[in-house]
Image (tube, rainbow, N blue to C red; front, side, top):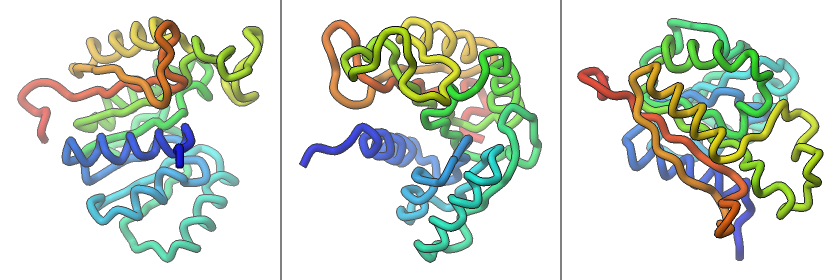
Length: 203
């Protein structure tokens, strides 16, 4: 049976983290917890922290996780990932799953400073909609996919932003897509995988 785009995203994140040996994971903008539940369902992951600025979302997340009878590997924090926090250092990876498009563009520089300069995990994985595929998904050109989105980027815009972030913060970055792929417009979701460079890349 074909999987949904949502399932494809979760599967890609888990497989990418496992492939890179990232057992301690930050889920930034965790919402009601679909990624946290997937991570907690895999014994490979040793430490899992979800962060969200929305208290109602975290309460929904807490209720959903409680029904799964999960152990103490999962921690939830009501906070913004646009704010530096030394307590969030030391993680192998941070994931922003369909999250940055909910952030006003003028706050992205704060997210960059917090995630890449303060938390500074070994890996950062970002997924976000590919605006080029919107009409193929039935979304008119003058609209966004979700009313909570502040923007949706083309592949060129996302790659330009990501390359700038990587260069300013000592990371390399690779790009891919999630879901089916159109020869001209690419996949409906796009990803950037940032890997910290230099002598401390494995720290």
